[in-house]
Image (cartoon, rainbow, N blue to C red; front, side, top):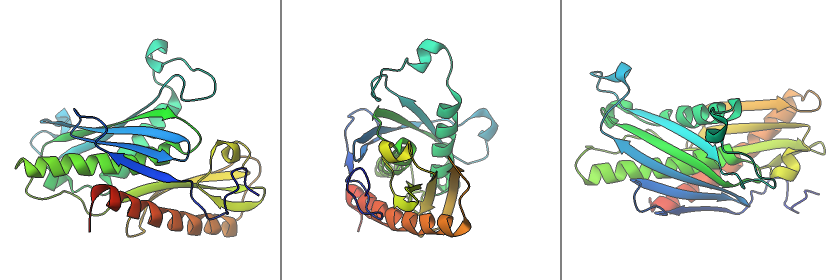
Length: 239
């Protein structure tokens, strides 16, 4: 039995609420159960120096956790004077994931920054950030198209992410913190809407896991991603 009472292949309740910030070109509040991540897209009429004159755009991610996103308060990283390794890893993952489905030539020489701020953490903050980040990015590009800055939406597919793990030797989908902290192994899966693999991150926390167990987690991830892609389409009012 999972601590939440969910079936092994059951996601937490997922909500993708759009238009939650009136200033950002695109915004989405992603809720995976008790995990809440605010994703905001900002369009800049410039690209990094190394892309100038190439005709290619850029999408990058930034990630942060508010002090009381967790049970005990943590200091802001700005107060420490530097970002931690985990933060840097996650924001690079967000950027890679979103760029994987972005036609950067169609985007042109614009940069879109996706800020992902964790309001409340209960496991799966990076997967919620990627899933909500795509919605915010799509909204920003739609606004650019409406303003005549883009000829078409610069997407080759959707992208979403979900976690899976081995909890009490059973493969389970969408781990919350209680499961993640006790799992024998856990993995994050980033897939496109068509099911192509963008990135896999798997770790044995207690003991090594077998290929068959990994395949079982991948099957669960594909089910979860399918549900998330539909949730994204509903949030964006796509046919």
